[in-house]
Image (tube, rainbow, N blue to C red; front, side, top):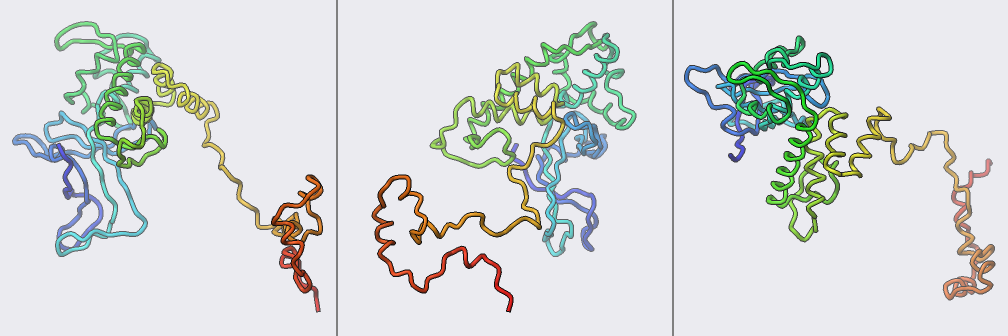
Length: 317
Protein backbone atom coordinates (compact mmCIF):
# COMPACT_ATOMS: atom_id res chain seq x y z
CA UNK A 1 0.00 0.00 0.00
CA UNK A 2 1.34 3.39 -0.90
CA UNK A 3 2.45 5.43 2.13
CA UNK A 4 0.30 8.35 3.08
CA UNK A 5 1.07 11.34 5.26
CA UNK A 6 -0.82 11.40 8.55
CA UNK A 7 -0.74 13.23 11.87
CA UNK A 8 -0.08 11.35 15.09
CA UNK A 9 -0.31 12.48 18.66
CA UNK A 10 3.06 13.03 20.27
CA UNK A 11 5.59 15.67 21.27
CA UNK A 12 5.62 19.18 19.86
CA UNK A 13 2.61 21.40 20.31
CA UNK A 14 0.40 23.85 18.50
CA UNK A 15 -2.30 26.03 20.01
CA UNK A 16 -5.03 24.68 17.78
CA UNK A 17 -4.46 20.95 17.38
CA UNK A 18 -2.62 20.02 20.56
CA UNK A 19 0.37 17.69 20.63
CA UNK A 20 1.12 16.07 17.29
CA UNK A 21 3.75 14.68 14.96
CA UNK A 22 3.99 14.72 11.19
CA UNK A 23 4.42 11.22 9.80
CA UNK A 24 4.63 9.25 6.59
CA UNK A 25 3.12 5.86 7.26
CA UNK A 26 0.99 3.12 5.68
CA UNK A 27 -2.68 3.67 6.50
CA UNK A 28 -2.91 0.12 7.82
CA UNK A 29 -0.58 0.99 10.71
CA UNK A 30 -3.09 3.48 12.15
CA UNK A 31 -6.38 1.70 11.44
CA UNK A 32 -8.50 1.30 14.55
CA UNK A 33 -10.30 -2.01 15.01
CA UNK A 34 -13.47 -2.33 17.05
CA UNK A 35 -12.83 -3.94 20.40
CA UNK A 36 -9.05 -3.42 20.12
CA UNK A 37 -6.85 -0.74 21.69
CA UNK A 38 -5.42 2.09 19.61
CA UNK A 39 -2.09 1.59 17.83
CA UNK A 40 0.66 1.69 20.45
CA UNK A 41 4.14 3.21 20.41
CA UNK A 42 6.66 1.18 22.46
CA UNK A 43 10.41 0.98 22.89
CA UNK A 44 12.10 -2.26 21.90
CA UNK A 45 15.71 -3.36 21.74
CA UNK A 46 17.06 -2.74 18.25
CA UNK A 47 18.60 -5.97 16.86
CA UNK A 48 21.68 -4.21 15.45
CA UNK A 49 22.63 -1.73 18.17
CA UNK A 50 20.92 -3.40 21.17
CA UNK A 51 19.81 0.09 22.21
CA UNK A 52 16.22 1.16 22.68
CA UNK A 53 14.38 2.24 19.53
CA UNK A 54 10.79 3.29 18.90
CA UNK A 55 8.34 0.89 17.25
CA UNK A 56 4.60 0.92 16.59
CA UNK A 57 2.22 -2.00 17.07
CA UNK A 58 -0.99 -2.00 15.05
CA UNK A 59 -4.38 -1.89 16.72
CA UNK A 60 -4.87 -5.68 16.59
CA UNK A 61 -1.23 -6.30 17.56
CA UNK A 62 -0.45 -8.39 14.49
CA UNK A 63 1.78 -5.82 12.77
CA UNK A 64 4.92 -4.09 14.02
CA UNK A 65 6.46 -0.99 12.41
CA UNK A 66 9.78 0.77 12.86
CA UNK A 67 9.61 4.48 13.65
CA UNK A 68 12.48 6.54 12.26
CA UNK A 69 12.84 10.25 12.95
CA UNK A 70 14.45 12.69 10.54
CA UNK A 71 15.09 15.87 12.47
CA UNK A 72 16.28 19.17 11.05
CA UNK A 73 18.05 21.82 13.10
CA UNK A 74 15.74 24.50 11.78
CA UNK A 75 12.26 23.96 10.41
CA UNK A 76 8.54 23.91 11.19
CA UNK A 77 5.37 22.52 9.65
CA UNK A 78 2.36 24.54 8.51
CA UNK A 79 -0.72 22.47 9.38
CA UNK A 80 -3.99 24.08 8.31
CA UNK A 81 -4.06 27.41 10.18
CA UNK A 82 -1.45 26.45 12.77
CA UNK A 83 2.31 26.02 12.93
CA UNK A 84 3.94 22.87 14.26
CA UNK A 85 7.12 24.02 15.97
CA UNK A 86 8.85 20.63 15.75
CA UNK A 87 9.91 20.35 12.11
CA UNK A 88 11.00 16.70 12.35
CA UNK A 89 9.46 13.99 10.18
CA UNK A 90 8.54 10.51 11.41
CA UNK A 91 8.74 7.72 8.83
CA UNK A 92 6.96 4.52 9.87
CA UNK A 93 7.70 1.35 7.91
CA UNK A 94 6.74 -2.32 8.48
CA UNK A 95 9.44 -4.60 9.85
CA UNK A 96 9.64 -8.38 10.02
CA UNK A 97 9.21 -9.32 13.72
CA UNK A 98 11.58 -12.26 13.29
CA UNK A 99 14.47 -9.75 13.03
CA UNK A 100 13.48 -8.32 16.42
CA UNK A 101 13.10 -11.76 18.05
CA UNK A 102 16.25 -13.26 16.54
CA UNK A 103 18.74 -11.73 19.06
CA UNK A 104 16.77 -13.30 21.93
CA UNK A 105 16.87 -16.67 20.17
CA UNK A 106 20.66 -16.40 19.68
CA UNK A 107 21.21 -15.33 23.29
CA UNK A 108 19.08 -18.19 24.62
CA UNK A 109 21.09 -20.69 22.59
CA UNK A 110 24.41 -19.27 23.85
CA UNK A 111 23.35 -19.33 27.50
CA UNK A 112 21.30 -22.54 27.70
CA UNK A 113 21.58 -24.37 24.37
CA UNK A 114 18.28 -26.15 24.85
CA UNK A 115 14.74 -26.06 23.49
CA UNK A 116 12.46 -23.48 25.11
CA UNK A 117 9.06 -21.94 24.40
CA UNK A 118 8.98 -18.49 22.82
CA UNK A 119 7.53 -16.84 25.90
CA UNK A 120 10.61 -18.11 27.79
CA UNK A 121 12.98 -16.88 25.08
CA UNK A 122 11.62 -13.45 24.17
CA UNK A 123 12.01 -11.80 27.57
CA UNK A 124 13.69 -8.49 28.39
CA UNK A 125 13.61 -6.71 31.75
CA UNK A 126 14.65 -3.42 30.12
CA UNK A 127 12.09 -3.66 27.32
CA UNK A 128 9.20 -5.80 28.64
CA UNK A 129 6.93 -4.85 25.70
CA UNK A 130 8.94 -7.25 23.52
CA UNK A 131 6.39 -9.90 24.53
CA UNK A 132 4.05 -8.22 22.02
CA UNK A 133 6.19 -9.67 19.22
CA UNK A 134 4.75 -13.13 19.91
CA UNK A 135 1.33 -11.98 18.67
CA UNK A 136 2.61 -10.62 15.32
CA UNK A 137 1.52 -12.54 12.25
CA UNK A 138 5.07 -12.60 10.85
CA UNK A 139 6.32 -14.65 13.81
CA UNK A 140 5.18 -17.79 12.00
CA UNK A 141 8.50 -17.57 10.11
CA UNK A 142 10.41 -18.18 13.35
CA UNK A 143 10.57 -21.80 12.22
CA UNK A 144 12.90 -20.71 9.43
CA UNK A 145 15.59 -19.65 11.91
CA UNK A 146 15.14 -22.30 14.59
CA UNK A 147 14.73 -25.99 15.24
CA UNK A 148 11.25 -26.87 16.48
CA UNK A 149 9.99 -29.59 18.80
CA UNK A 150 6.39 -30.30 19.65
CA UNK A 151 3.18 -29.41 17.89
CA UNK A 152 0.07 -27.32 18.30
CA UNK A 153 0.19 -24.68 21.03
CA UNK A 154 3.08 -26.36 22.85
CA UNK A 155 6.21 -25.96 20.80
CA UNK A 156 9.82 -25.40 21.81
CA UNK A 157 12.50 -23.66 19.77
CA UNK A 158 16.29 -23.53 19.55
CA UNK A 159 18.42 -21.28 17.36
CA UNK A 160 19.70 -22.90 14.15
CA UNK A 161 22.60 -21.07 12.50
CA UNK A 162 22.38 -22.91 9.18
CA UNK A 163 18.64 -22.27 8.75
CA UNK A 164 19.10 -18.62 9.75
CA UNK A 165 21.78 -17.98 7.13
CA UNK A 166 19.61 -19.57 4.44
CA UNK A 167 16.68 -17.38 5.55
CA UNK A 168 18.86 -14.27 5.39
CA UNK A 169 20.10 -15.24 1.93
CA UNK A 170 16.49 -15.48 0.74
CA UNK A 171 15.75 -12.09 2.31
CA UNK A 172 18.65 -10.53 0.41
CA UNK A 173 17.59 -12.10 -2.88
CA UNK A 174 13.98 -10.92 -2.45
CA UNK A 175 15.13 -7.40 -1.60
CA UNK A 176 17.56 -7.31 -4.53
CA UNK A 177 14.80 -8.41 -6.91
CA UNK A 178 12.52 -5.68 -5.61
CA UNK A 179 15.24 -3.04 -6.00
CA UNK A 180 15.74 -4.14 -9.59
CA UNK A 181 12.02 -3.80 -10.35
CA UNK A 182 11.89 -0.26 -8.96
CA UNK A 183 15.01 0.73 -10.93
CA UNK A 184 16.82 2.28 -7.97
CA UNK A 185 20.36 3.56 -8.41
CA UNK A 186 22.73 1.37 -6.36
CA UNK A 187 26.01 1.56 -8.26
CA UNK A 188 27.48 4.14 -5.84
CA UNK A 189 27.92 1.40 -3.24
CA UNK A 190 26.02 -0.58 -0.65
CA UNK A 191 26.91 1.83 2.14
CA UNK A 192 24.82 4.65 0.70
CA UNK A 193 21.68 5.42 2.69
CA UNK A 194 19.96 7.61 0.11
CA UNK A 195 18.01 6.11 -2.78
CA UNK A 196 18.36 7.94 -6.07
CA UNK A 197 16.03 7.29 -8.95
CA UNK A 198 17.97 6.24 -12.01
CA UNK A 199 17.45 4.96 -15.51
CA UNK A 200 18.80 1.61 -16.62
CA UNK A 201 21.57 3.46 -18.40
CA UNK A 202 23.39 3.59 -15.04
CA UNK A 203 24.43 0.00 -15.72
CA UNK A 204 23.59 -1.59 -12.35
CA UNK A 205 24.22 -5.35 -12.32
CA UNK A 206 22.57 -8.11 -10.35
CA UNK A 207 25.60 -8.16 -8.07
CA UNK A 208 25.19 -4.43 -7.37
CA UNK A 209 21.58 -4.96 -6.29
CA UNK A 210 22.54 -7.96 -4.18
CA UNK A 211 25.31 -6.04 -2.44
CA UNK A 212 23.00 -3.12 -1.72
CA UNK A 213 20.25 -5.45 -0.48
CA UNK A 214 22.70 -7.19 1.83
CA UNK A 215 23.59 -3.81 3.29
CA UNK A 216 19.91 -3.08 3.96
CA UNK A 217 19.30 -6.45 5.64
CA UNK A 218 22.43 -6.07 7.76
CA UNK A 219 20.88 -2.97 9.35
CA UNK A 220 18.77 -5.40 11.43
CA UNK A 221 21.55 -7.81 12.38
CA UNK A 222 24.27 -7.88 14.99
CA UNK A 223 27.79 -7.23 13.60
CA UNK A 224 28.74 -10.88 14.08
CA UNK A 225 25.66 -12.27 12.34
CA UNK A 226 26.03 -9.66 9.61
CA UNK A 227 29.54 -10.90 8.84
CA UNK A 228 28.31 -14.50 8.75
CA UNK A 229 25.58 -13.51 6.32
CA UNK A 230 27.99 -11.78 3.93
CA UNK A 231 30.30 -14.80 4.00
CA UNK A 232 27.38 -17.15 3.38
CA UNK A 233 26.18 -15.13 0.38
CA UNK A 234 29.71 -14.79 -0.97
CA UNK A 235 30.06 -11.02 -1.04
CA UNK A 236 33.72 -11.00 -0.06
CA UNK A 237 34.41 -7.31 -0.52
CA UNK A 238 31.67 -6.18 1.87
CA UNK A 239 32.36 -9.05 4.23
CA UNK A 240 35.98 -7.98 4.64
CA UNK A 241 34.92 -4.42 5.42
CA UNK A 242 32.47 -5.61 8.08
CA UNK A 243 35.12 -7.88 9.61
CA UNK A 244 37.60 -5.01 9.80
CA UNK A 245 35.10 -2.78 11.61
CA UNK A 246 34.31 -5.55 14.08
CA UNK A 247 38.02 -6.25 14.69
CA UNK A 248 39.02 -2.65 15.22
CA UNK A 249 35.86 -1.67 17.06
CA UNK A 250 36.20 1.91 15.83
CA UNK A 251 35.12 4.20 13.07
CA UNK A 252 37.35 4.32 9.97
CA UNK A 253 39.98 7.09 10.04
CA UNK A 254 39.31 10.39 8.35
CA UNK A 255 40.46 10.58 4.76
CA UNK A 256 42.45 13.73 5.36
CA UNK A 257 43.87 15.10 8.59
CA UNK A 258 42.99 18.62 9.57
CA UNK A 259 45.68 21.27 9.31
CA UNK A 260 46.73 22.51 12.74
CA UNK A 261 46.55 26.19 13.50
CA UNK A 262 50.31 26.47 14.05
CA UNK A 263 51.23 24.70 10.82
CA UNK A 264 53.40 26.54 8.32
CA UNK A 265 51.39 28.38 5.71
CA UNK A 266 54.31 29.43 3.52
CA UNK A 267 55.00 27.34 0.41
CA UNK A 268 57.99 25.04 0.71
CA UNK A 269 58.82 25.32 -2.99
CA UNK A 270 59.12 28.31 -5.27
CA UNK A 271 56.68 27.45 -8.05
CA UNK A 272 57.52 30.68 -9.85
CA UNK A 273 60.81 29.20 -11.03
CA UNK A 274 58.99 27.26 -13.68
CA UNK A 275 57.86 30.54 -15.22
CA UNK A 276 60.95 32.72 -14.71
CA UNK A 277 63.32 30.30 -16.36
CA UNK A 278 65.86 30.77 -13.52
CA UNK A 279 65.81 27.12 -12.57
CA UNK A 280 64.02 25.20 -15.27
CA UNK A 281 63.90 21.55 -14.20
CA UNK A 282 62.58 20.38 -17.54
CA UNK A 283 65.46 22.08 -19.30
CA UNK A 284 67.97 20.35 -17.03
CA UNK A 285 66.37 16.94 -17.48
CA UNK A 286 65.56 17.04 -21.17
CA UNK A 287 68.34 19.30 -22.39
CA UNK A 288 65.91 21.37 -24.47
CA UNK A 289 63.05 23.76 -23.83
CA UNK A 290 59.43 23.33 -24.76
CA UNK A 291 57.69 25.84 -27.05
CA UNK A 292 55.96 27.46 -24.06
CA UNK A 293 59.24 27.78 -22.18
CA UNK A 294 60.93 29.33 -25.19
CA UNK A 295 58.14 31.90 -25.44
CA UNK A 296 58.43 32.74 -21.74
CA UNK A 297 62.20 33.10 -21.98
CA UNK A 298 61.78 35.92 -24.54
CA UNK A 299 59.49 37.94 -22.24
CA UNK A 300 61.02 41.06 -20.67
CA UNK A 301 60.98 40.27 -16.93
CA UNK A 302 62.25 43.63 -15.68
CA UNK A 303 60.10 44.90 -12.80
CA UNK A 304 58.32 41.55 -12.35
CA UNK A 305 58.09 39.85 -8.95
CA UNK A 306 58.21 36.13 -8.39
CA UNK A 307 55.18 34.39 -6.91
CA UNK A 308 57.09 33.50 -3.73
CA UNK A 309 57.55 37.21 -2.95
CA UNK A 310 53.84 37.51 -2.24
CA UNK A 311 54.11 34.89 0.53
CA UNK A 312 57.21 36.30 2.21
CA UNK A 313 56.82 38.37 5.41
CA UNK A 314 56.82 42.12 4.91
CA UNK A 315 60.06 43.86 6.01
CA UNK A 316 59.76 45.89 9.21
CA UNK A 317 60.00 49.63 8.75
